[in-house]
Image (cartoon, rainbow, N blue to C red; front, side):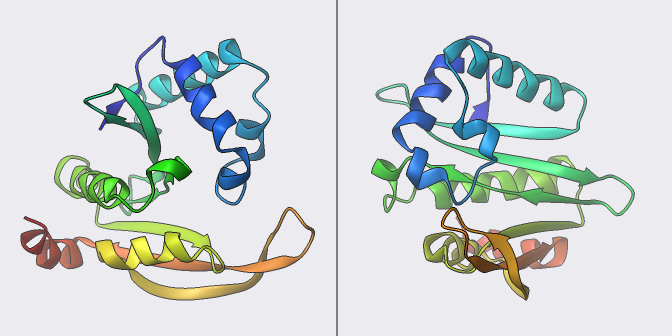
Amino acid sequence: MRCYREGEGATFFDLVQRNIEHFRIAVPENWLTIPGPDDAENLIREFIGAWIQHQAFFFSMWDRATNTLLGHIPLFDPNWQVPRIEVGYILGQEYQGKGYMTEGVRACVRFAFDHLNMNKMLLYCREDNVPSYRLAERVGFKREGLQHDHILRPDGTLTGRLCYGMTVADYQELVTTWE
């Protein structure tokens, strides 16, 4: 896990293209319509700029043995006064079920609490995205609520949005069990 680097736009573009339908429920529509690798490179530069300005922290997940981009975990929408931040995640479909995202989200939780000094982390996912909410619960996020009929699916129907949170106190209790 690390922040993105210049020159990784084509790799990001390839991950998104291979997983368009799989990612459709979790990523902004503009990511799904990136015209090509050069445009993806511009997006990577935006990720890097956001990190430098502490507006968001976009982590890339890599297989060290093959140097393959597996997924993406952003920490975004920080509120430095409260302090809290939101986490999201996407993982290439072919890499699911291997523990990569559990490990990656735990690393981002550590980063948020230990380095950014956050008091709370937020996580939202569609109520019909079972792998996503199971991951949230496995990592230790607590379900705080459900917003009914909150998200429009690609087929035009509505689904709810689950709201999860983790406080610094929750994290301090959990982190010793992650070792």
